[in-house]
Length: 236
Image 1: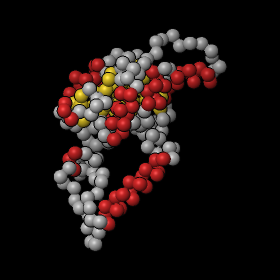
Image 2: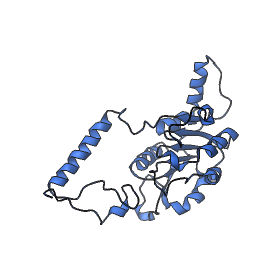
Image 3: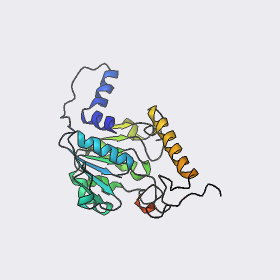
Image 4: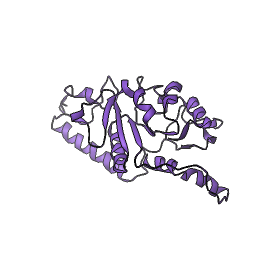
């Protein structure tokens, strides 16, 4: 996410395109800075929180969006505030970067439709590393082409994979990766997954509460599972 954001801010992907054409000329538009920018992280789970912390460390002002607002006294130190999804439309026009870290559920499908994308700040950047179903791909393509959005970094699309004839492939303000941010390109990822499994196996063998239980209501790990987590009975 940081790579996509900074690459878009500094036009690095456009310069790579020019390098491939052996062009030695500057792009005539201002670049962006992470410091001082307003970052709206939609989906403040593990991935969103990790990105929010790093954006804060780079000098950005971060606002988080969750299903429900977080009281000021419980707000993490790397966020100005954490609002509920009902406040999303109020926050969008002020955000220089909107980072989507959402699961694929009926509640998130089409969340960023044409109307919501149009509410984004002129010249804003969109990142999506959650699920492509959250974004109207055709509307996003249009807004990039019209110049309403500065750029988009997408690890996911709708449909996925994106058809070869879709115009988003050829939109210079977009950078697309083939849903690879959650794979094992970082060797430590596999070690982390094995460690999580081993810890949970220990909980299971001791009849303890398991970590990372998924809510049947939200379809992902959330506060809804608090107080409802079951102890495992390994002898059954």
